[in-house]
Length: 460
Image 1: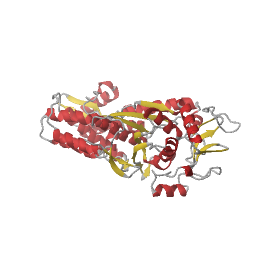
Image 2: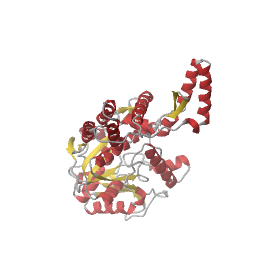
Image 3: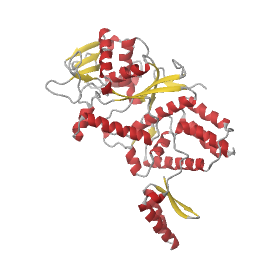
Image 4: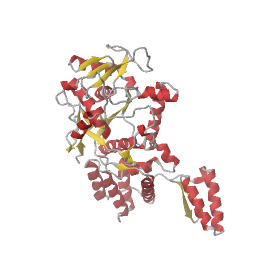
């Protein structure tokens, strides 16, 4: 079965043809670790996880590299302002190194809670400074670099097809200054920093010696240097959020192809925004939602993951607490249906639904259609063993924790007390109080189930 993916570079679906099958070299842009990641960020990581799992389902061998940006990402897209890592350190009264470790660990914990597979290589920008310097030197020898008082810049006029990843709208946005602010010494708006000098008379927490003076790498150079170190000069697939297209990924292409003269990635995939109040979720807005916020409201991170599965990764998705509640209910019902199969041994016999599932994923990772095949299989009159075999296959991609038994309430004394109070209210036929206590228990993240042996509570 052939996997067809929408290539942002050609604006068309293309069949994946790996350079060295069955291996698929895959690079996914990771977090800038100066703050927590919000749920909008995780929408991208969820679609990338589906990609990796789909490749495995189809018999391929993905080799995934993800970066961690722990230096060089400035507060301005125009190569000006402070390094976000230094800003984070000042905000919290810690070193930039401590900030990087703390938020990297937080990110990895969130990924585990979402049941996302770890990358084969997780590379931190600060650990590959020599490779980044070497790539800048390579570009310098080819005449792509010029120097200003604050650093080395890539001359975008030297690359005839600069900006080929961008659309007309992206170009218009750049020209109007919507995304990039002007730097007086830059020769043109689209030129970008490869290496920044440490400010005169100021010692940065993160700075390195280089052939041009003490400083630190520009944001874009890390991805090119680390991707090519682990995956070679041409990748099979490069992924990220849609916001990376006009600046970060465009400049990755420029510096990589300027250095090698070869295509940097055969296929580019980009996930769309998560919207909240009709605007993309962003840290700059100050009101972003974290996975921890979901848990505090009684949701599982996997409820949010299911919510992401309700829309194609290239479509914008609205986030509301009401829609998340609906996804929570749907995931719970799906898990209940899966567990209702009991200990039925998995047996073949679900070929029709398996084919639908794979066909949907092979069509540019159409998870909503794949999920529909799962629901239809559960509603069918197929034997439990056949359904179980298919659900095992589906879980290898969806990873929604469908078969785990929910934890019993004995571990939570507060809920045990509320259950006892509710039982007394029911015995007294005080059903209004019984309903109120049920709501209180559910607000704590539990579901009340009335059984012949009495009421029990299980985790949502």
